[in-house]
Each structure stands twice: as structure tokens, then as C-alpha cells.
Amino acid sequence: MRTIGIALVLFTFIVSVPVSAQAPEAEVDLETVMKDFGRAVSDFGVTFMLFHLNDVTTNALFDVPLKYSLRAQARAATMFYVQGEADQDVELQTDFRVQQGAEHFQARLIDIENFSEGQQLEEGEAFRGIIAIEKLFDPKRFLENMQGIRVHYGGETYFFDFPADVVAQLP
Image (cartoon, rainbow, N blue to C red):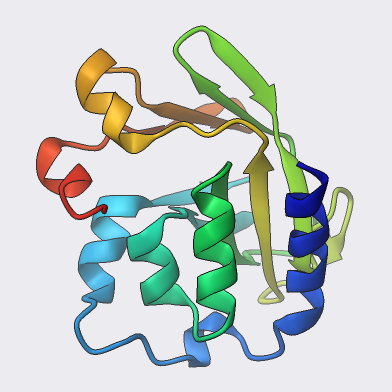
């Protein structure tokens, strides 16, 4: 697990171009990826997208060689990519907790840009980061036991329950 942590730290130094400026590969429909694997969050003075990282989303959101590194890491641990901005001058709250079934996990945060607890953000300022849980919640298990992933943030719960057609996109 330490290897994953080191790789994620290296990831923060590798990223130099915002994801929105990168072109996804032609066969990936970003709108579908957002609908299937993303959740919009607006709370505590910030608005962001939260993406479950997997083979499909890493391919759509990141360029080579980063997407290969993140894809490998997302196959070993549950990870979410966060990208958003402040709606007002705000102190960023990063109390993310993840649950599947009865299991609860405190999330570990990887700061890419302005994504740390207590970060002071001005209105319109962007932030990006990774939320990582050492345990892998395999989306293919969702179909077997009907226990999707729940991400808790700011008193709200965001559900990552993937239907069969969405899970079928994953290798």
C-alpha cells in the first residue's frame, strides 16, 4: 500500500496541465462518463465533480502516461478524482468518508491543486485532488451484492450504484 501512496505523491508533481485542457481519446464520450461515473456536488461554498476512477474514467480524463499510472492504482484501491471551484471566498472542507455495506473508511486526500483541509479559496479559484481508500470496492461486486459505494461529504451522501450496463463498460 505504501507503493500506492508514493505513486500518488509522484502524481501530484507530474500533473502540470489542468484536466479540462486535455483532450480525451476519440472513442470516449465525456458526457457519458460524467453521467455514469461522476456525481455533482455543491456544498459549503464549493461546486465540484466527483469521479469514480476506473479504466473508463482514467482513459477519458487523463493523458498518457498519467492515465496508465492512475488506472493501475485504481485497480488496487478505491479512488475518486475531484475537480471544482469555489462559489465564494471559503475555507475548503475535506471531510470525505467512504462506505460500502457496513464498512466505513476515512478517505486519504492527495492534493493536486488547492485540495487540502482548511485551504483558503477565493471565489472562482479551482481545486483538484484524489480521494483514496486503501480497500478496493470492485464495481462488478455491486451487481452481486447490491452494495454500491457511498461517499459522505458535508452531511450529504453521494451514491455510486452502477447498473449492469455501466459495469459492462469495465474490463
